[in-house]
Length: 256
Image (cartoon, rainbow, N blue to C red; front, top):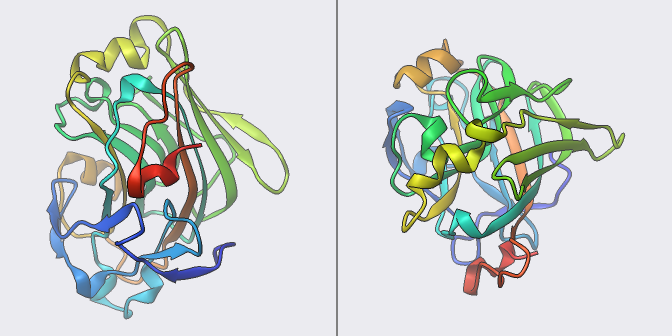
């Protein structure tokens, strides 16, 4: 169970909205309102809780729940991203409670600007800047089967790199993810795709039956009785020093 007080997802106030249809990473079955299990934490418009156990047992858990935020941002102005995350029973399920993607995505991932902050791929809980080594690494000692509340921070450094850390909210133990510098840094690899290409936050569970090569690598086999669920909350996107706040209106909840 999540540690927050859940309520129905209110798209009028939440930064999140259900994304119906198919996605290249999970192309079958198509996702729609009949499969929607999303909730939010009371009083936190940035939060999202998705849980396959709210669906009926059987084929309806063979699903591709997919949510996107309408709050776009210029990644060149981002100084830090932080959030809290929990996962439960997501072993052997391709699930990514939070990632960011440019509106216009260009292959390969390592040059696109996409960052998968916490992604369970082939039963490895990773932080991923790309589709192959050295562009991703496991979160040491962490598992999607049972992930207690963690505080995740991605620091966008002056040298163009991004430093990811994860701290256990109960024990205080902190671990670090892959930190690429120099010609392999995030900025060096991806800045050509920034410009007028805004970024957005995404959240999903790819427990469908078909997909692209990423599905073949990360999901392996559909789990029709999966009990995978996760909660992401307290998402904050900090501007670089000296920059103004990045969000207004409904999206201002993302400001620190």
